[in-house]
Amino acid sequence: MSDPTLLVLSSLAGGDKHGYAIMQDVEAFAGVRLGPGTLYGAITRLEQQGWIAPSGPRDRRQQYAITPSGRAWLTAQLDSLQQIVKIARSRLKHA
Image 1 (cartoon, rainbow, N blue to C red):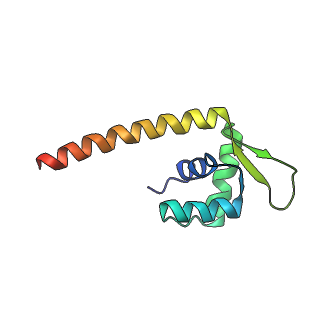
Image 2 (cartoon, rainbow, N blue to C red):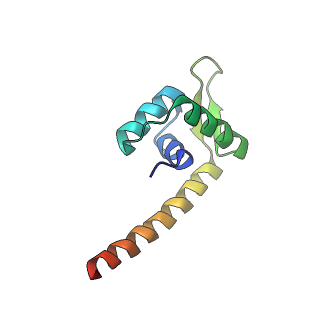
């Protein structure tokens, strides 16, 4: 799974982080290295959608937090993925 939206929101679900910390966290839990262009493009889109928001003072290392609507979207996506995994595992057992 390498969807930047899902990865960034998953990272922020664990607490507020700045861009570089998000990049490190995603690499640690997903094994995916998000380049700066991909990461900051995703951050911009997520902010525009209202799924994340700056937290704390605006400075060079701006921290971001997941919003309630971001948390709701992430939960819905994870529920959908869980259903896909359940079906795929069941089918693999019968293959």
